[in-house]
Length: 81
Image (cartoon, rainbow, N blue to C red; front, top):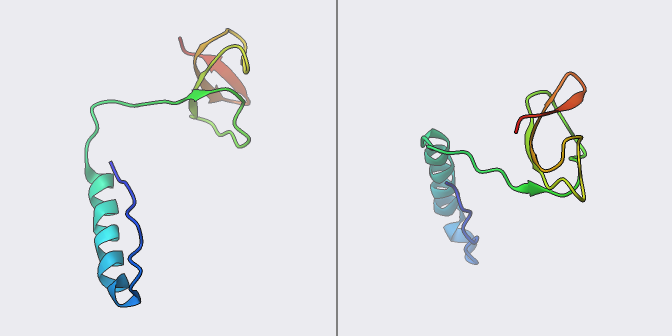
C-alpha cells in the first residue's frame, strides 16, 4: 500500500525525494493484495463506469435493494449481495 510522505522543505532534497516516491509507487502497484477493501458510500458516485463496484449504506443512498454491494453495468446498478 502506498502512503505519501511530506515534501522536504529543502529544495535541494527534491530530486532524491521524488525518486524515492516514484519507487514507492511502483512497488505498491506490483504488490499483490489478498483482499479488496470497499468504503461505505452514502451518496451515488458522480462519475460512474461499467465495472464499478460500491458498498451502499442502503439508507442515505439506496440503489434499489437496500444496504450491500452493487456493480454498475449497462447504465444501472446491479445488486451483488
